[in-house]
Amino acid sequence: MSDSANTDGTGVARVADVAGLGAAAVDAAGAAGWRRGAGVAGAAIGVVAAGAAVGVAVERLTVGRGVRRKARLALDSMGPYGTLRGRPGRAVAEDGTELYYEVDEVEDASADAPADTQEPLLKRIFGRRTPPPVTVIFSHGYCLGQDSWHFQRAALRGAVRTVFWDQRSHGRSERGRSQLDGSVPVSVDLLGRDLKAVIDAAAPEGPLVLVGHSMGGMTMMALAAQYPGLIAERVVGAAFVSTSSGGLAANTYGLPAAGMSVVRRVLPGVFKVMTAQPELVERGRRATADLFAGLIRRYSFGSREVDPAVTRFAERLLEATPVDIVAEFYRVFAEHDKAQALCAFADRPVVVIGGEKDLMIPSAHSEAIAEVLPGARLVLLPGVGHMAMLEQPEVVSGCLMELLEAAGADAGASREQVPAVRRRV
Image (cartoon, rainbow, N blue to C red; front, side, top):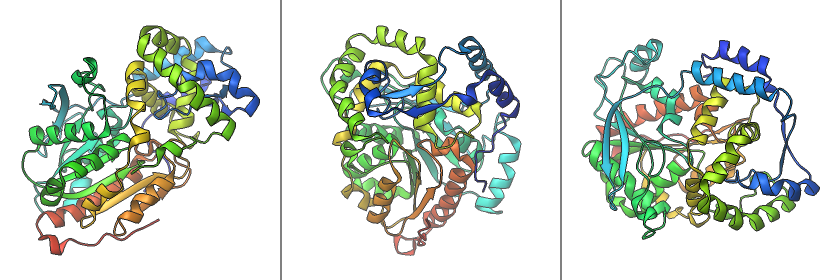
């Protein structure tokens, strides 16, 4: 496995370098700068996936802005990321919300999947045996969508049946109906029930491997809390990527105490504006594209060596989330507490992956999950930020391959025969 993302954006990277995208520096401001930046940066709070954008200073916003805009357009047109598609389907949530998902069947080793990611992985995961009837279900994070799993989708395509879905109000899924009419606020528990609806529609039978990033991992925990029988009977493996079982209310997002104090003061007003005047905030977000690009890089990735085409891909995913959805969902994370629900995964293969430079959900949260699941394999990635599956795609995909090996053996064994998964740091 490589120590850095190995993508095919070399030519695009040169375009970005010329444009100066790779040189945009985003540094934490001092305490004196927090109050000055709070008004503008506060509106970005959830767009960078958990709300730590207040108070950053972005250098050279007015230098070469037109050139950087052209480079972004070039990256948008040239980047191949997020282009893989599968057989579409729709699950119906308890409130009637339609949840969009796509299925990649084992026999769908499609022409649009890179050829060199298919046959070698088939041999590596299953050797010459017929792949076991396992379905892997991927749940994405806050302000993202199913395409955030692009690299893992390419790596596993044709090797195992996979389901990728967009959480309510994200991606191609419908805006939550009970949130639109104000009858039921969004919650992690509701997302867990949404995942159950997707499972019922896309994988009603057979063993399951659940994979979740950030909010997606919390969704998996909420599923376990409400449907422990489903976990016991059908789930043969799980992967928790850059996620938390609780305690996020105390997170500082890498900010000093003065910065967090400002964040907590401005958040109510920011969310009120984002909810009441989303079009106004959207215009502001578009007008400060360079600011948002810097924020996204800072809070998504731990290294500045990530392919610019990949960072631009992350920007597009986050930009696609309407600001009122950003505000609506951000509120639920402080209340999230599902450490007890993790116990449902205790007797099966589990991998827990965290980035040591994750400012959104620090790696201590991954360690806490592993403490509850002492048989889990804990993988902490040095120098990696929140979007580990984009920053270190080969490492994350490799961990999933090894999990699938264990889950494949588990699928044909009794629960007493489940192979132990060694913990590795």
